[in-house]
Length: 187
Image (cartoon, helix red, strand yellow):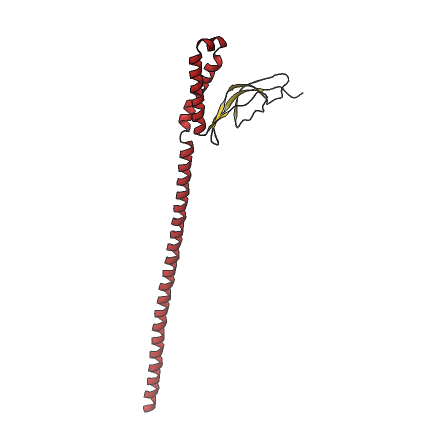
């Protein structure tokens, strides 16, 4: 009878070892699951961090571009409002006859000096005058056609008259030059 007890004892040891092994495997699998969850959370946080870093860099670049644009083009409204003043002064100087220039030479000289000072201010702030000549080709990016007329001796699309000069602020058009364009068909 002693032998059956011995076998039961061995069975109990094998069962205990199996239970202990199962508990260790359960702990290992729980740790592995927890480790996998932590890795997934780490990867998610790393992804969020990288996206936030990229967003911050993009915002910095947008802000820098906005600052540069404001610095270069911030005065475009004022510049656009000053263009009629330039036009009127130019018309006044062109309208003065030789006789008027002799009689009011000091006044004319004052207007010319003011005109020169205005051009210097324009140049200082990056405003360039777009002054097409009669015979140049019409460029819709730089010119505004005020009228079309058939003029003998010209080709269609040639400038036949300049009504008003145009202006550029750095690389942007403030106002197109106002021109008349030939509509003479090619013969």
